Image: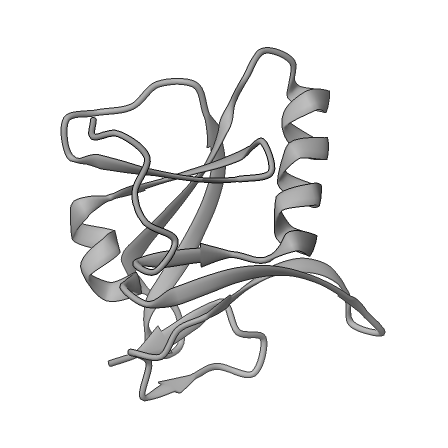
Length: 114
């Protein structure tokens, strides 16, 4: 795994950093939020979110305000220039990825097309 990467490659908003740090504290230890992209979803690709305490050779680490996000290189190619936010609205509370590479996304924002 590489050292901490530039937030220009992938950004973390202040709201997301607070929420990630809070959830990580509840998990115990020092877990990282792993964001992945896989084929599927109603638009072609879908985001995956999970907490992880281990990293691999192809993982890249991003950090803001004590919150750590890890993304594998393949997923990062599809996420380059994106930003994760934590949103609380009438639909609920959720992580939302603002992805400038996506040409379209589904209504719930959990899948996208390039």
